[in-house]
Amino acid sequence: MVHYSSHLDDAFGALSDATRRGVLLQLGEGDASISTLAERFRMTLTGMKKHVAVLERAGLVTTEKVGRVRVCRLGPHRLDAERAWLDGYRKLLDERFDALEEVVRELERKEDDRC
Amino acid sequence: MVHYSSHLDDAFGALSDATRRGVLLQLGEGDASISTLAERFRMTLTGMKKHVAVLERAGLVTTEKVGRVRVCRLGPHRLDAERAWLDGYRKLLDERFDALEEVVRELERKEDDRC
DNA sequence: CGAATAGTGAACCATATGGTTCAGTATAGG
DNA sequence: CCTATACTGAACCATATGGTTCACTATTCG
Image 1 (cartoon, chains in turn purple, brown, orange, yellow):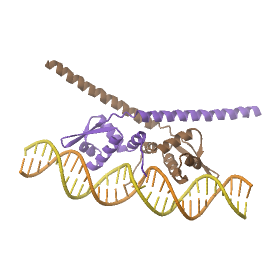
Image 2 (cartoon, rainbow over the protein chains, first blue to last red):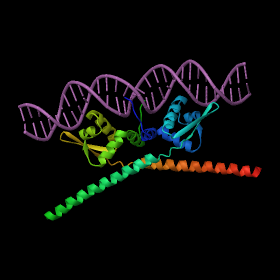
Image 3 (cartoon, protein in one colour):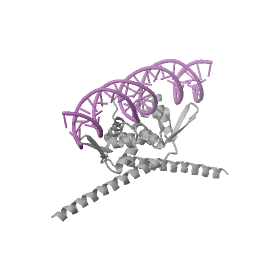
Image 4 (cartoon, each protein chain N blue to C red):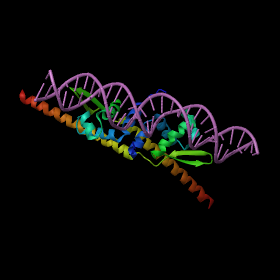
């Protein structure tokens, strides 16, 4: 079964791992090589390379091979769409909550009528 | 290898699938049964139940068995921590960008001195 | 040149997703 | 009571994660 992953899928998926979130914060301090990242997160080069690949696919990180070193830096993705989704969801929750409140008020009003 | 998943892991993981995001938006319109959701997203009951289980583990959905129907509704999780993470990341990006600008300005100043 | 360093790729392993089918259980309703 | 409905659980399948080791390549540097 082929899986068509959207931008949101990739980004949220990339953020769903503590190591990858840590790598992003680390790269915020400055560019780093695979080795540096691997050492800091106590992992093999190969393991870290896979994480970087996931981040790269999501557009969160770009890499460039300089000599024998692969330099990793933060990519252009600012997670705007993801933030927008969360905002929309919060608005939805608020509306839903308001609707429930309305129902409660309605019930209370009827209750008052009965008395 | 035991995997200790954090709250952020679970939430971002739950959001990394279009069907699950759709289910959340759908539940924003009102509570729904597994059958209703399965039909709307053209999936078997079993498949939908698994998605709901993931959303439930993330605290985004709560369910209640009423007779033979399992009613799904939006849970208490407002994704505040996830939004905060995205905000922090954006701030990090801005700071990093500012730092790069500073470097560029510095280089330009030296260039001017040389001339 | 030769050795140490940095990365790469294949292979392997365990678990989680994202689905399915199929066989069962529980309940609503005539 | 009987049947249709709604869900549940086990089993299965393919792919993605999250790791590892090991063999290999490419580069730097003395």
